[in-house]
Image (cartoon, rainbow, N blue to C red):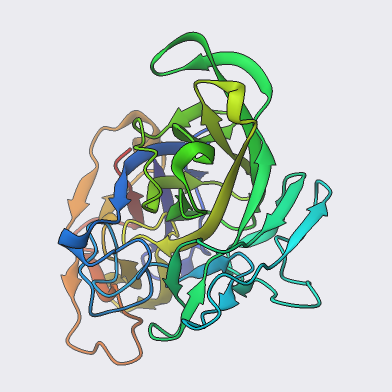
Amino acid sequence: MQMYAGFGRRRGFFLCGVLLLCTHWGRGATISYVGTQTSTTANGYAAANWSNAGVLKDFDVSGEKYGTSGYYQIRPIPWDPVAAEIGGPGEVTASGNLLGTNAGSNPTLSSAPSFLSSITGGAGTFVNYGGYGIFRGPDGSSLYRQGGLSVSVNNGAFDTPSGNNNGYFGVAFEFTVSTPTAFRIGITVDSNGGGDYAPDYVGIYSSSTGTVFSTLLVRNAEPDMAIFEINALAGETFTASVWQRSGTQSVAPVSLVTFDKTLSDITPPVIEAYSVTEDYLVITAIVRTGVTVVGEAVTDLDNYASGTLVDEVPGEEAADQFGVPGGSKRMTFSVAVEGSVTKKFLRLKASLAQ
């Protein structure tokens, strides 16, 4: 995926304006399964302690916790060790629900990701009963008995990675991305009592990728967070589903969804300045870590299209990094206009590996 931006000058008296040659970030989303964060005594119940910076995580991008860009912890109840078996919500909800964020009691704990335009739950039941898993809250310390959105798993049979026509799925939630973003999403299951109602797989669907599945999960009543990495364009919609290889248990709940932007964000570089001196073209830009940016200089715009006589202009890290956001750096790209050259053009090419 590549993006170009540039400008040029004619020696003496003429300066070209800003030239945006093209923007191309691919034809659609990419989705990849990253791995599953499990809960065992060996790793400090990492999935249940998703927000505790003191518990080592296998797949977080911040080095501290999951959900740094947003989260939905579905309808937990403050945990009371004396009255831990008291029942909680068992409320039927329609498709398009707000994942329990608007509930009158025990609402979903949430922080909406800035890069989503919408997120809604599938038809099902909000559940939280005695014996459900104990999770940390967003503050990393408060304890809750974790609830979930339980959806019917009866739309099948359909193919799963383990064979043809041996799976049943239910739509857990759907979300739409508002701006081009690369992020990881964690979907936690198997925290609602016994493992009978846990899914065998979690999958994410988009129209450009089809369904991308997790690996086969262990249904043992120990929470698992299936983590996917998504590079999304603005306006793309994704559907998260839970799958069982046998439809005999009929339902499967999702208890927690986390979002974390990755450093390989597909946001293009922010152009700060076109500094033009008598003998140089200079572009200063803030460049996101994980995005490769180089300058390309030509004396004829046709050379960009043909790929001939294009001089690469490596960027230099600026001494002044004041005000640059984390995960980025200020870079300067400079090319001389020398000798008999009467005009020159400079553009930046930003690339993100797919």
